[in-house]
Length: 415
Image (cartoon, rainbow, N blue to C red):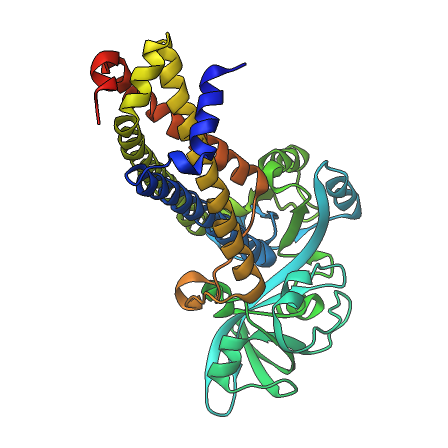
């Protein structure tokens, strides 16, 4: 039989032995641990949800890996590339590649009777993955985009529609300036999307790839680039290295050099900003563990002082200091475990409540989302519970040595 564990159970589960002094100390320690864990769970869930939501928005507009003309990546000057069927098949066979799609970009001006706005037209074809745009559609519908013909339909953002007073079904003229020539096209607004990503909503609208290619005076097999979607985001760098190896020293049939970059390289400011959130997480976790640790230390000291007579009796009966210390450490472990259970219920409950009701709202202009995104990660929550328990017990080892200074004779006279 584990003697310290047996005594700790008797003390903890015996209501009659909980004196007036120790009862508030135990409650305060339990609440401290519960609040600390609940805050940690909510913090981690918010950061994970926020990072993944913003990442998915950026990927929705720019994919995981972009393969473009080397000149475009170095100078930002639009330059076309030609992707042969052979190269496309090789790209799709790369491990971890889920989908490959082509696109064509061009610049233009949308003009109504009262206003005008400079925008970027992204031409996509029938093989383009529009699931992200479809999820963010507010009005209208997505047309069937094509790389072979022009439907003269366009999807604009809510911000563009509000600035130009456009509605689904409206006709709008677009003007394109290239090679000292001005070209006009009349588009029909087929849909309006809203992603709350300012850098995209301000400028990006979608139309047929055939339309943008003709406006750029490019050949039918030329495009701005290819977007590659991966199956596992964690292995995006390895997949990009495979793409680099494939197109290294490769030129298309027009002599253009191909190059690739990951979404991290295409939008470094956004991902650098997201990486800074990890620092905030570690700071909050450290503060909450300190709160739990300090409340447990104060509670344990109060309990040890209150149990002075019991400590003296145990020593008089032959118990060693080590056994007595372990008794109080087991007792503290019970208190911590109860606090962890309550903290799990509170933390997970609030996260699930936010996921179901979205009762916490944010300013999309500042945070790119209109509600606080939360994501439950069970392995991380389990790790937080284990880490809190181990660290809290560890910091109690030093205070537990107080029992070594308690003399049986004096302790049995203590009242």
